[in-house]
Image (cartoon, rainbow, N blue to C red; front, top):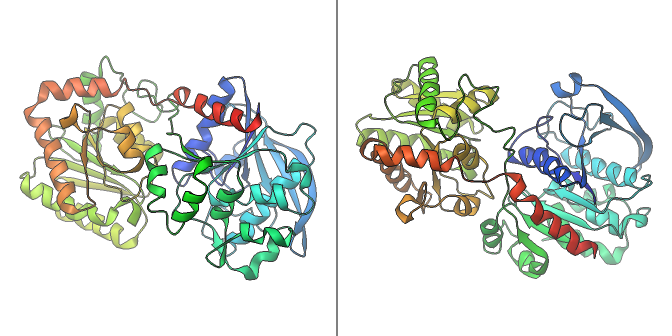
Length: 472
């Protein structure tokens, strides 16, 4: 089965969030099943581009409205990623150094999707499935089915995976000419609430729609930024498949980013060594429990509640724990993080931005990971934490609900219900108390969570079955 993944992000080439980790791992494990999966991305000016060898595999011209543009497809020469990896270059559109945030993002991603479809027309062997990820590629099912000049693709099944439905890629009808000419009777497929909505269009036109956890799919029927009724109408083709993680890439026993290695059998002695190193580097006391937060400083992650929750928990716990914060985003939250690190410098440290080395080291050193998210389609951080023997403290929502059960219900984490400072503080205090007063259980729990299987091997068969249902 030949599978084409089309995305705006893919680790290790271009990463903004968890989308990149999924797209960078899923095709690798699909190829382990003797399927043929590849990835197509825009060609951003990233260090990875200049540090590897490429070859041109296709050049052609096609149209974005009345502009005839040339695009070039290059392929990574080595196969270190575990799958064929292609980049599409469109001079002046896809050759910036950032993934998102340009004033012409609509034109950039529409042109990218047109180029992908145009290139597929030239394939001697058509793919069995085109798998699109998030709104940046969600117009592809419409273009393949209804775009003038693309009818040869209309029998190829498509899958749309929604990693975050809050972002929908909507734009005004004044830019409708960017999309390849279509049958006017199909105009309703593009429209949602008076705008062209890329995500809504993909939901309507894709053969199957998936989200990255079953609970998140259920939540979208109740809260999906205006698409609730659409999910109800298209429910027959919607399913939630929980993400996995790349256990080769995320392995505390071989991680090249960390200063010390460990596994489930020696975690309680060797993780302590990693914690001592990390705390020494950041001037923290390793004898106190170490909590971490890793994520974007945005509303969806409840980052606005983070520092006040830490202040209150520290006061109630009499400064008996430490906290390390890694992230960036909202400038106000960044300032709050700097402020608490100044006033509570003995107990709170931060890294504004993201460093893979510091992030990996934090997972390996920490005792607890806090994820107070308001929205969490799947969440990968809690899966990485489990893999590294770090106990998650999470809000009971989305993929967090599917992957972490509370220790009070014979589970292995600490969960809470509401996105409130009070709930976050209570959960942190429960974890802190568990660390100090249930030492034997803490050590056993840490060993256990490292054995939980969230690998892609346990997930890819679900995608294989999904593809089979639309190819029969």
